[in-house]
Length: 262
Image (cartoon, rainbow, N blue to C red; front, side):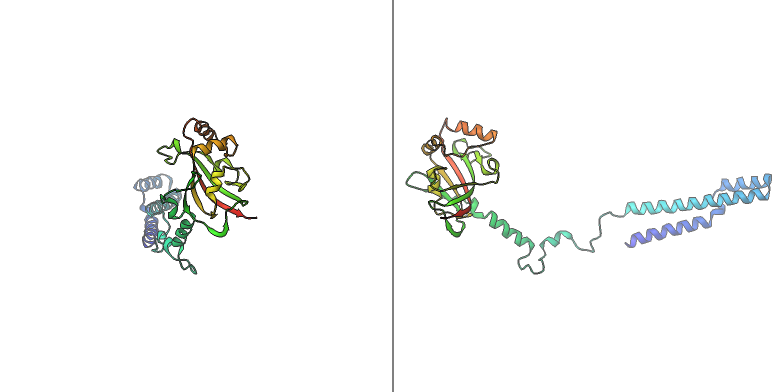
């Protein structure tokens, strides 16, 4: 701000000095006035002096404007922050917020995506041959049982089609892509989905997360009984069609979103 004021003051002084010295501003103009005085007389000389004075005044204003434009160009365009780094404000606590903004956001992230979701836990094998890993227990008093009306986010992968991008297997079905509201809802025991899947979901709480491995023999049986969720995307249909030409073991990744018991 101090530099800007100094430059403005310099421009004003320059303009004032230029205006004060306007009678001798242009040597060529002075010579022309002398010649004009000899030829046309004093009346014409006074008129030309007035014109030259106005011309000099305009020139002085242009000099001042040029200096002011230069000052504007030189000065930084970034807004003044009164000596405060705005990036540091993100770490400041909000009045009345004990944890602080950054910590609060981390807490929300930990709730939505806890570290336990990425832990490679051992499968628990059931007598039917179905296996599952519980990544998140979930919360709430209600648990899945026979007759429960439930909804879940679900992804189904073909284990035999593992790739570098999808090490758990190529995905053929996802509620995110294949349903309107990113969830699939059904009544446990109604025969809508594979029996082995429901067996491995017993006892889950709301927000519980499990990966369930359904053996190939049960997958073929579920297909014959029309109990497998069907894909709607082109890529999903292509993977699904290839599934039954090899080992058809499926991995169901299930996140329970709603439970209502009878």
